[in-house]
Image (tube, rainbow over all chains, first blue to last red; front, side, top):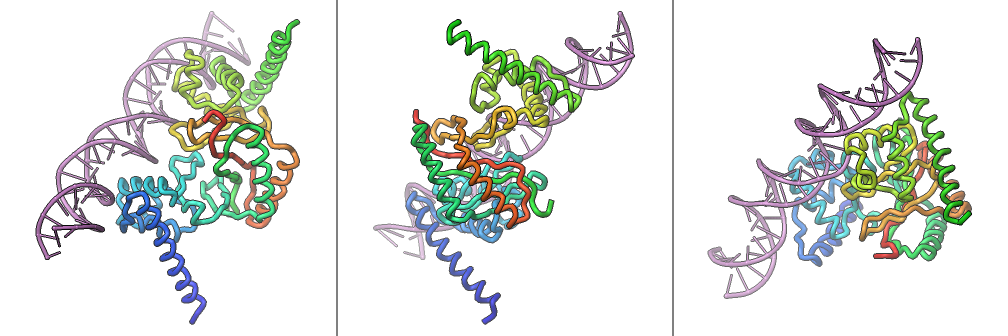
Length: 156
Length: 156
DNA sequence: GCAGGAATGAGACTCATTATCAATTCAAGG
DNA sequence: CCTTGAATTGATAATGAGTCTCATTCCTGC
């Protein structure tokens, strides 16, 4: 069995677990996990980075724009997908943290691309600790934090 | 001299220094520091927190919407004002970091308000250090970072 | 003062996103 | 394997934040 095939089998397993998990979440809220919604998830998984809507429908032209927007919204409300606002014309979408893990973004000011990065857990822990101090001090109750880098990617 | 008056005198001095600094920046790029632009800056200073455009023009109804948007853009391009995107309908504006100092945001998911907070310098230093490591590892050249808390403010 | 570029403001315009609605699909019973 | 009601779809219309246009006004240097 080649590395290529092994990888592909793992991917398939990952995808089907993901679909099962998402299907459950949707069912919980009285929604169906239709093929259009499944496609949205798959496009985002395959891309591996946040995407804007025009790129999503280009990646799978069977997706109708209005349905894509509507379904992204459903998936966002069910906690499956997350919106990212970086101030271009379009909103970015990616899998939500419960599915993709906690991570941060490298946002390129030249080409507008967004890449995911993980910080090591030591840093993440320190950040969490100081954020808790801030919360205690201000009465603010945090649910999550965002820590993004703005600059120029390796290609720009 | 009452505390009130002293405070007010300090504020006046702060404002006039700020105006001088901003005027210089604008002149450098061949722009004038007109009364409309001055008003925008003053509204933001007085507010003390990021504002969206409807609130800005409400705070000083002499400001025309189109001119306000245009001038905010000029001020952003000159590094005087910063845009903040948190994914409501509107973009938020605040004084840029060189004028306001490096800080972060408490973003309320209920009422949409944004409040500024400073982290202590130890944390800030740790964050910087880890961000530099990330940059070295990925080839990304950062110009700045944003670290914001999303949650619910003391009032909500 | 005056000439020429910069700035203004009212309104038209763009375009990402959302709402509408008739047609279609689906799941659960019977 | 029919039916029925609710969920979903997709084409299209509508919304609205932000931008552009352009005639007019304001500055600033000469």
